[in-house]
Image 1 (tube, rainbow, N blue to C red):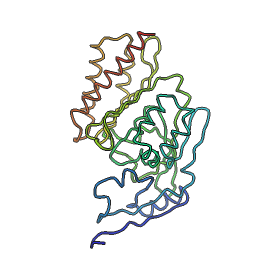
Image 2: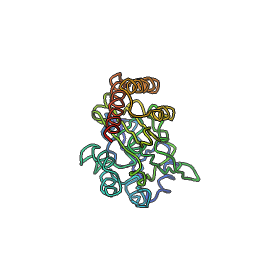
Image 3: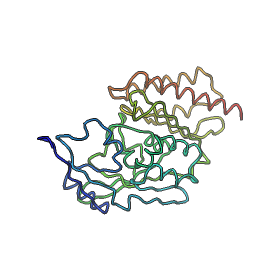
Image 4: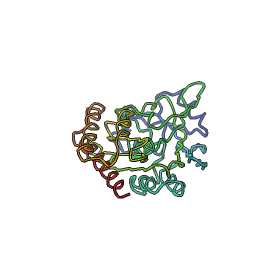
Length: 296
């Protein structure tokens, strides 16, 4: 090995508490799930500043899937394909299609839920899908007490798409609501490849219902993989003011407002193309909702 390079030390805890304790004693070590994203980054290895690894592979509690009447709960080491297989009869057709569109079958069989949600500065389709669905995650804090709490997936990130708990907590479980699929409509769209072309890709999610011609309880999420994770209660409230049928002019005005909001939320590496794509996606979706409403 060239001088100055080092191989990482790999810790192999058998429990969540042990993994958190390792991290507490070794702050520079990183939690390691499937490694799908980490190992694909340029300069990952060899690297003079190679960080030690806390492998989560041997923790059985992180591989469990639990079905309840109102939700599906999956450990952070469950793969995306396992989630899709186990949830296929509980999820809506639209949600199944959205998860199935994530990468290839090879990627879905390797990538874990926790790994997909916890990349430090890149957002992928699963985070947008689950945030739109109002899913929650359990996080175990890296501290002496190692206390845990449940938070919405949307609270894992700031508006620029940075994961807020990369050094301070371990995501252990994800809870996905399944009792809302008959009450709400769910739309998910991904333009371009978040992994291969993050500077042009756009991930779009919208959950809503129609009540007496108006959009009720909308939940919009826009992710620009390397620069933005946008959810706004103010913008959702704006969508709630829409009464169908709507004019093309009104749909365009709402879309332009989204573009304006995104420009204020993104990191410097966001491209004008992405913002325009996101705005046009919303415009298309609003017109689709309008068409469906008119068709009865």
